[in-house]
Length: 320
Length: 300
Image (cartoon, rainbow over all chains, first blue to last red; front, top):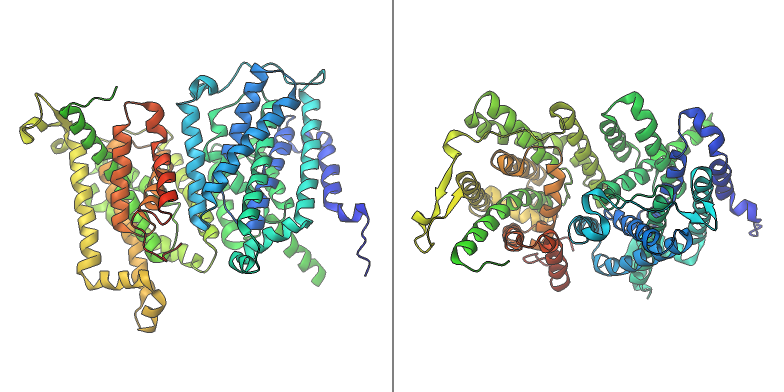
């Protein structure tokens, strides 16, 4: 068997995603999407791909990932205000700050598994939310959020409209590629082993904690990058960037799309943002209710999400 | 600043007791359901939400007496229905699936209530006999001068004490409780002995829901009646369960009071009071990963 696949064969998913993402401004308005929403979808694609590395591969369900998104967003905002309007240093510092926090939280929360982990991450997320609202108010702007940032710049280019979309799309493609590489790497294998049977993995002499922490921090870095990009896209940081609502939303996106597939959560993110911003106009104010019902139906009947639905359909077509 | 006078200390103690009471009532249901069925019910806050909206509606339409009887009864039935209709299919699925489906249910319930009652706070009229204040200095002679406390909040404290006592009595003095406690330890062995443990656990789920109903009837006037309240209370209640030790009733009571007191005694400093709950959680879990009274080997 020929195991030496060409670059294109190995990266079919990434190339397909790149093609869809980069042509998005052409076809997205036709289905009712407005410009800006496509940028947001790209940013959330980054968020959920990282989240899926944690939930889909190691099986750890975090309810506090908004913390990393929000901390990075606030850091980016403060960098814009206090340091420079160049996005590169802002994003780098934001990701570093946020992942450092993730290391500490990871060390504390990964002591426990399953439900404990979910509840603890939820608690930490809420802690940062409370801190932004009270203790750190003078920096975060509390209830009003962080405003008054200059227009973000990338070496003389204003990061607005198309520029920010293509930048986000580029980052999303790169981060998807990186995630695919992680998936195929020995670390990816460890991650799946942790999900299957952590105890058995430890019996083989492998330090599972190290890999859990690594995965947690990687997924936090993805969330942080998304948070920083969000401020580049729209120079405003609200306290809801830290709240459990956002953490929950990411969980919804990943599960509806299909966890453990990387592509699924991105589909889920696109679907949910489209549902929230475009379809909600037709459905009315109770869109979240319908989304909740869809989510429940997916969890009950199709735990693999859209991806499972697609593979089932494929199998049926092949039968006929 | 921190006030060390006897009056201030007494008031903070009372406030802590009252805040802790609500946490205890919600955490009691959570930990009962978790200890028996091993299910983390993210929809428990939503059950509380159903309870306060039902309580407000019945209270307005028929009076408080009806609310007091009907709400816990309806919630008990709702709990049974929820267990039979949804939760029972998730016993053999991963914990994350249970969290996800109850989380989804919480969203659905919250949105339905929002659609029916609106997103704003609804005033909860306290019945005549519960209105007013209690002259604390008449009861406790060591207090200096004139000290009063809202009557309703004291009633809430008493109700939660009675509820906790009732649950303890049920679990420790009846044969039903004996089977439940045995089932928490080793459900398989009980099945071998021919006990229909699933049926009893189903009733426990209903009981947990019923306690949320009691919490709603008496807590509604204190916690406000708006769709956000459910999730808002769920997070600290979860922490109460975790700090106390998953599945431990005594632990839940202890941790609920601890959290309530901590919030009350730090209330003078908004920076501290908003994060004190999380600080306590971190410290407790670092020192005692099983929680304060968590039994060894239970859902570790």
